[in-house]
Amino acid sequence: MPKCEECEKEFSSDQGLSDHKNHVHGSGMTSHERKEMKRKVQEDVKTSGSDKQKSLGRMKTIAMAVAVVVIIGGLFYVALNLNTSSQARTGPSASDHWHADYNVKLCGEVQPDLPPSEGGVHSHGDGLMHIHPHTADEIYENANIKLFFHNSGVTLTDTSISSEEWGTFENGDICANSTTPGILKLIVNDVDTKPIATYVPSDRDVVEIIFE
Picture 1 (cartoon, rainbow, N blue to C red):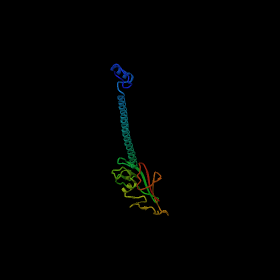
Picture 2 (tube, one colour):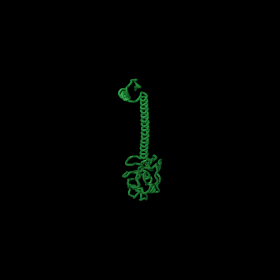
Picture 3 (cartoon, rainbow, N blue to C red):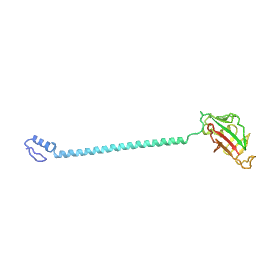
Picture 4 (tube, helix red, strand yellow):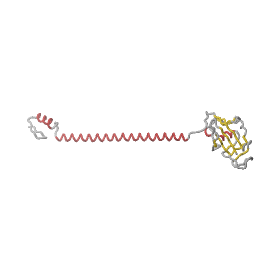
């Protein structure tokens, strides 16, 4: 007679045994078969969990790499902008055409307007600095008052001014109408300004060179 391996109950037919296993023990599998299936299921679960962890790990690595690239790119962009900003040029470009009033007063005497001169920073003999650079040597910080006076035959430094017509006036010299050493000054829009020679006039500035 057929006998159940699980509970050792006997049956009159194989069909009865099969029905018994399905209803009582849940399937037609033996205990060994169920244990083996359980083991495989557990292994599948472990494998699946391991795969998910690996996948998650890869995603985290990729996300971190992207974040690093974005951060580095952002820092590079900021650094580039800061560097560009720190190197920002001042003064006129080749497309500008500026004018600044000027006068020169030496030991109390106002000097006549300089005659017309050549170059992109020049005089028309009208008491104005005409500033419209033509070359790279005249643009931005190169368009300074030293260049203006140089184009008119006058040598200007931070401590002296000289020309064939005016003579030389240097810090420490004593004017005929004074008993104290004189000093060269640059007054721009009523403000004492330094350095002198490299000052770049802005449009409509009022520039005064004074030695007293």
